[in-house]
Amino acid sequence: MKISLLVIGKTTDGRLVSLIDDYRQRLSHYVPFELVVIPDIKNAKALSMEQIKTQEGNEILRWLTPSADVWLLDEHGREFRSIEFADFLQKKMGSGRDLTLVIGGAYGFSPAVYERANGKLSLSQMTFSHQMIRLMAIEQIYRAMTILRNEPYHHE
Image (cartoon, rainbow, N blue to C red):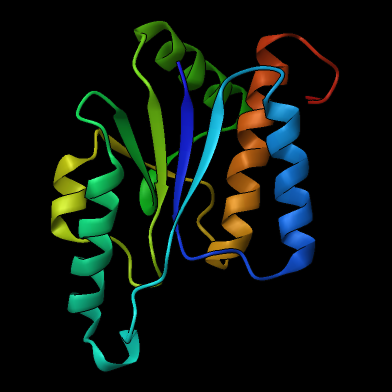
């Protein structure tokens, strides 16, 4: 199984880029992992919120494989404790399907993306920048892998 994190727009803060790269490297010891960055929509300032969501949604859908298990990071999604998230990932790994987690743009997802998704996850009830949530998602995937291997990264 491969885990992909699909995001809209590049990470511009060098400190976050460095931390994301660190966790990507750490993850490579546990599971095939890919960070896919979809470029920001051009001329977005001239578009409505719905037009932006539709265009971003079309780009997201282009990247998804038909067999992928797709979960959206969404404020209304299911919340997990870290150990529960590790169990969730273990079940997904047992399915044999690739797992794709998607972080949408500033306005969320288009109806077509919601329709394609297999589910929604929330990392917190709080709101974070889209660039920060990338780091948090990757760190939680890494944490889950260490939990599954009983390694001393997570303390409970």
